Length: 256
Image 1 (cartoon, helix red, strand yellow):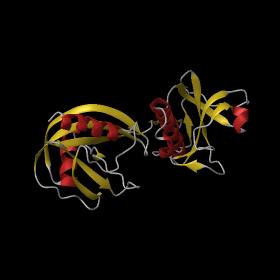
Image 2 (cartoon, rainbow, N blue to C red):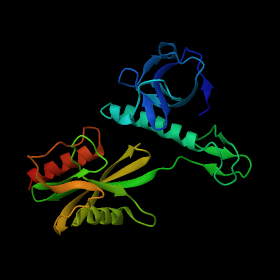
Image 3 (cartoon, rainbow, N blue to C red):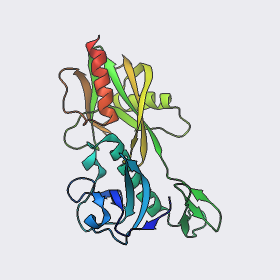
Image 4 (spheres, rainbow, N blue to C red):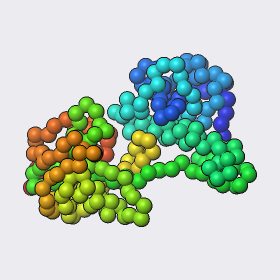
């Protein structure tokens, strides 16, 4: 985890990030020798490996082609997760240059992802926000909504942040009630996915409808409704946990 100066002979995948943006010079994550991308003398941090090739992080704003990580969301899942790690670490180090307790300048740990304060000996780690996301089935229909924060007319399942002192199960029930005004039952865990927008961990569930009429929260949702499994609107792309929940629910609907 020690930072090093690039000599030009290093090779691999290059995550160049600043302010939650990533450099995609040709619309994809740069790969190859450092000299190919004029990265000599840059300071880099080795953050992992993908298919036998090193993945490097360089914290810097480039003159052009700095875009959202969402632009490569359809990439191989492992590579996307490593790129997400890089973006999150870059933002973590940028926002922890000084200690929040005493104001002293921080230094990076060489043993772990952490920032250390020599003055008051406080230690900071990257923060991860736990979130829930849930696919809800009612007979052969699935609940889908248009979120205020989404663009492009995508419909997806309900999601939200876990609050302090709350279990995951309580968070699911609360978020569903707040956003759609319905009750659920038969909640079961499916999977999780790191979600670097900006620093979440999505924990996915499936549930069945238990009662209530949909009344969406206009502050969070543009609309919400029940959709037949073979007449779905535009849904999230592959490699997202939301897409998996929708596809899992479609299987259950067909078996109804």
